[in-house]
Amino acid sequence: MEILLIRHGQSQADLEDRHEGRADFPLTALGERQARAAADWIKENYPPDLILTSTLQRARKTAEIIGEAVRASVQLEPTLMEWNNGLLAGLLRSEAALRFPLPEGGRKPHDTFAETESLIEFRARAEVFWSRFRHEYVEPQRHARIALVSHGGMINMLFHCYLSLPVIGDVVFSTADTGIHLWTMTPQRRRIVFVNRLEHLHHL
Image (tube, rainbow, N blue to C red; front, top):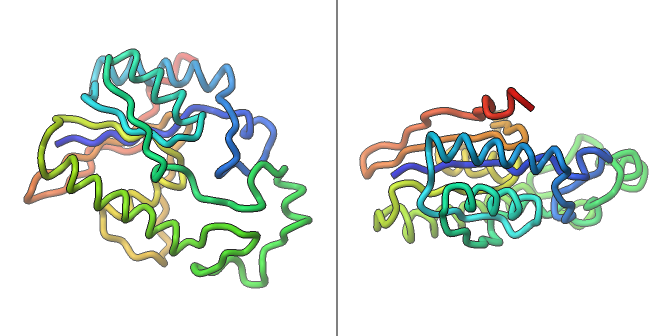
């Protein structure tokens, strides 16, 4: 089975330099063009049978654009939402730095500073999704290819789940706007085919 992981396009928060997370900003005009370019590339190369998406509108709209292009069903999956950044959500980064300066030594894995989801809780949520996904979609082999449309932080967490990496570590998997990753899974092997493909954006 093949699994596409796709990040949403540019959002309004990106332009305004705001903490996004659970703040539900829409795609910008450029973000929609990015999503349409990604949809065309995916349709030509790796069209999915099914799309699961975060319920936040920047991801949902990206998924809908892709779903329309490839004629695949889009299902909302709240567990794929971005890190819950609590009181930081929607704040300008400059404002957040003044109101909620990081604790001395930085954020710890157990921290819920500023009413946020801790790193451990975030990883646990990703593990819950991954376990459900494997048992409901991968092992029954109902689909040849599924796309997951989500956010940079959650995609990073899913990579850690897929590779069985520890909660605490220095490995980070970055994803640009509408970056595309491809995994393949069999009962015997998990493969990463490519990461953060962006050639669909070259003409924008």
